Every structure is written in structure tokens, then in C-alpha cells.
Amino acid sequence: MKSMAATEFKAKCLRVIKQMKTDREPVTITNRGQPVAVLSPLPPDGDQNLVGALRGSVLSFEDPFSPAASPTG
Image (cartoon, rainbow, N blue to C red; front, side):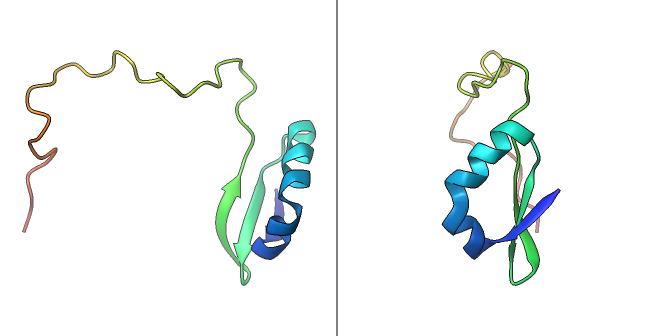
């Protein structure tokens, strides 16, 4: 996996993305030597549209304003 500093990524962002299109290799972006993000290519399968990906997955919808989980404490 490639690695580059955030400042270098900022300067070469479009070039890195174009290169990723051909070599499909993820890039780890670092800040002061510490990894902070990973830029990776989308899966090669044709289903790259995330809009509507979870459509039909909600089984019930009783009260949209109630908490999703009970508070602990």
C-alpha cells in the first residue's frame, strides 16, 4: 500500500486519484507520520451507486423521534 503525507496529497490529489484508477492500489494519508486516512478505489463490480443502496432494509418505522437506544448511565 502506498503512503504519503497529507501536504503531498493535497498538492497531488487529482494525480493520485487518476493513478488509483489504473493501479487500483489504496493510499494511506499521514499527518506527521501517523496514518489518518486511507483512500481506496471503489470495488470493480458495476454497482457503485450508493444512493438507494439500503432501500427496503427498514422493517418497521413506529416513532421516528424516539431514541434509537436507551441511554446508559
